[in-house]
Length: 514
Image 1 (cartoon, rainbow, N blue to C red):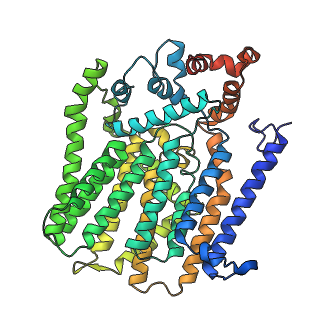
Image 2: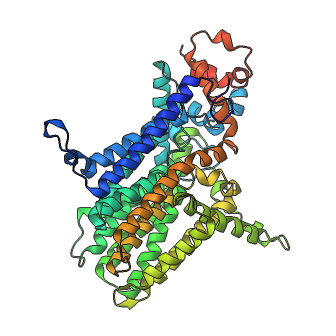
Image 3: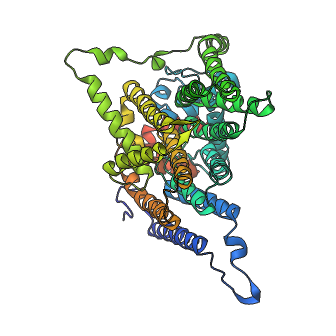
């Protein structure tokens, strides 16, 4: 008998009941924990045990949040799924090694040969390849020790680190209340792209997100300083993380480029030494990435692998926009705007698209009340240009990779950096609301954030169904069987199994040392 969502994913009634109970318990703990946090109730038990001595500790709540996220995500994924790009099945059938797992686990190549392997979409993100390599080693090590899975260790690691860095930004730098800070983190953590991206694919997007959060935090600290006096170690740290952001993914490169444009406007409005220094730092990170992309990467790849990188994926097909009478430009723009708003709405409690649009207008109204550097309207201008730039980034993504606009694609992996930017923007909007006395009752905002968090959590099954009905549906259905095959010592039991026959080259490759 099939249990759960009737796709053949859960066959055991005990497992189905266990997973359901765990989800219910975690949801109840989530609700009760936040109610206790808001009310600051002092529960007294026997032996004079005071409940509030630990439940009001923010770092305890952050740790609890991290553990709950990992448990929920691991149980829900049930071993993770084997992505077709990670497997590289078509290449293995031709005795060629091109999938992520086969490439990074190939015993006949060196570390740098693995990192600089070009599969036709070179994007100068070799830093992410290093962590992809570590993910593959973790998967292979677990498999060799009898615990086969397809989880991404770096995704969990970077997510947990991001939780604590975001708390530092919201609570220590933005000076938001601890309740708001925890709720904003919960909102980010429950956005579908974070818990549903638990399987091994690429570490590029979550790595970009983490480095951008750190870069933003360092930049915010520098902007708050009175004036530039001399170059400090903090400037080198800022440059390092800005450069790392560009090396993780092209989205990171665009975000750093966006910060450069932001600093140019600040320099034009008030040319202080601080703004000029920060602009030079971020411009240096962009230029260094360009040098690496076009000058250093080709000879390095040639030296280790005997061929030059393929820049086809970095070439934006602008020629498609000028096809007379095709309206392709309008079609791409329409998809970009819809996907852009969809990423925002599924991150804010799965609200209707119109509400997401109204939310952006409301944030603009908040920024219009602020005067920065004696220039009224500068905040609103920067905000408007910021949204247009993000939309332009997504437009280029859809133009280069049209699948990004699909329903399942903006719920998993790809929107992680953009979701992070949206949460930081929401946190800063709350700061401006406090500074301009727009918030009449802080409890109302608290309850709104709580409702959005709960709505995010309750919407996850719906998002998961969309993902399973899309590009990754086949992989999600077949992966539990592949994991079961790896667990079984006697592989002859599966020789007639259709899934075994389909993935036999990959299974044999992973079991080559057994």
